[in-house]
Image 1 (cartoon, helix red, strand yellow):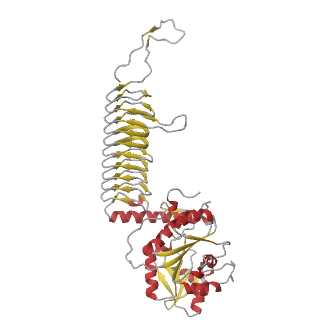
Image 2 (image 1 turned 135 degrees about the horizontal axis):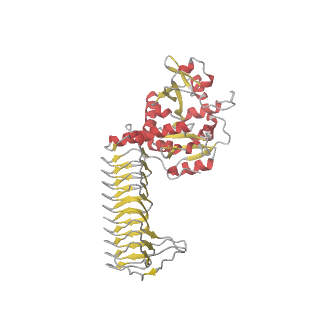
Image 3 (image 1 turned 30 degrees about the vertical axis):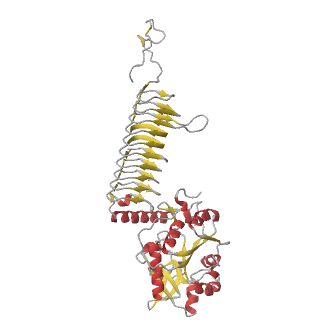
Length: 489
């Protein structure tokens, strides 16, 4: 299955690129692999990093950097990948057989491309628009025909090594073919290439499969171009650009980096994190200055927090809008909800899509709301369900209150409760129903009829008392007392 929510979106900018003179270019994104080391039925490039599919992150960075066209090479689980990347504006090209990286680039039909071309893998999710712009700045400044993007890392593992002679690129040596001395090299091939389109057109057809794997390797284009006297160079980037994802462990590392990068950006704008390494804020989330985020908080999707908010530990907030000075207490789950100034929810509240919480309204522990407008100053202290309801200003909802909104006809009906209403504990409202302003509903009532304004509603079973009651088999007499009348609440 496709990851939910943000499979069809790409991330908001990490920061505004400092190099603003964007250069038009075409991007080819290689995304045909299965990713067997992921041990997952989901295509590798659709695995989410900090809540967003890897391929969406790559496409987002390319678009922000100014790519005029993005060609994505697909193969394994083609339809799933298409459903994610095509809504982002990318064009898909099918690699029929996975016969190497050069064969994948051929599948993108580069013959009709003009100008600069960037080739990148779809499993490099930490690349940003600024990184892409920096690559092109170096490419144009160096006036090369082809540049290989490299990085210096502590543990190169099985990545191809960059072999230099006199500081110039001599060769790219795969780890499995490298000598012990070559394996000591820390500079690796990031598997990102930038070149002019004519280089690709001239040398891509010359790449052969004369190797043990019988595959067409894009790295061979470097030697072909050098032998033909072309100007071939390298561009060194930061380590995060080189972080490819081939396993669940590497996926988790990428998410940690992305979450921490986002937290750092927010702290720079005045947000307070008690422990930024243990908070999870997705790229598209916005938080106002002086808001406080406690450990274990997860903020997702289009969530936007105003100033001076306080989000306590282990709260999860998704696609919600919180105004200034909103408090979300420990363990609360909020989705698709609007909370206005100085409102409060929790601990352990659940606010579901369509809920609007008015200014200074308070929602307590184990209260659940769905598609409910809870107006200014209203209160629901604990253990309550309000669905498809409207609750007026300053109304108090007692413990254990339920709106019975779902009927046997499988339709949902609305409960309307006016302002300044007092609802006693353990009340059920059988919708559709309307409660007028200033009404009082007695505890333990099941309300099935509309209640006028300023009225008292009591709907209980009658109470019977049997004095001197003894179990069967005893000789003590039983004395019945007349049923008591309902008084008050």
